[in-house]
Length: 179
Image 1 (cartoon, rainbow, N blue to C red):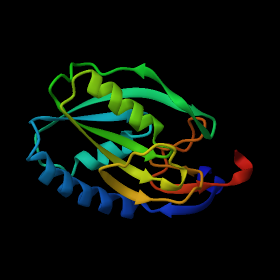
Image 2 (image 1 turned 60 degrees about the vertical axis):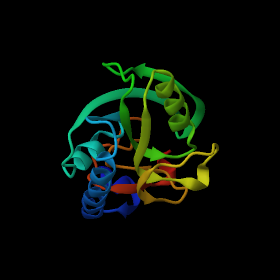
Image 3 (image 1 turned 45 degrees about the vertical axis):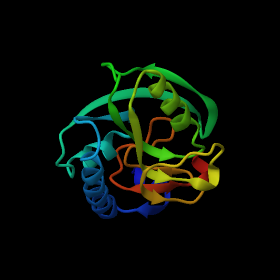
């Protein structure tokens, strides 16, 4: 079983759901001050479980779109991003909420925000399930954070190692000998 590949469970499914409820309430308050409807942009593939849980707890009028970007090779962020799937619609003048699974070095979010502002976005907020500030290489912070984690290799609830472990309903730390 894939759970046997974990050193420990870091964040339980219950904790994730509870935190998504809290983040949803926070976002609802802030969305009221933004241009409606706000466009939630999920960063594929890792954000899908988080975004699906998060939007269940938002009562505001929102729309959704997705982007696929890559900045990783194996376990390391390589610094530059590659757009694999772009947004389906124009974002000119739109307020966006970028939904990320994890903010690690910060490079992906910084570059994505720059790109989206260049495409005409009005305001961009970032919500992330996990934040790893000890790995930050650029000066950027998420506007909304689920959980701050130490510098361990985490998987589950959308986060992967070579496309595996995304389906775990919680966040775990992968055993070192597996990567």
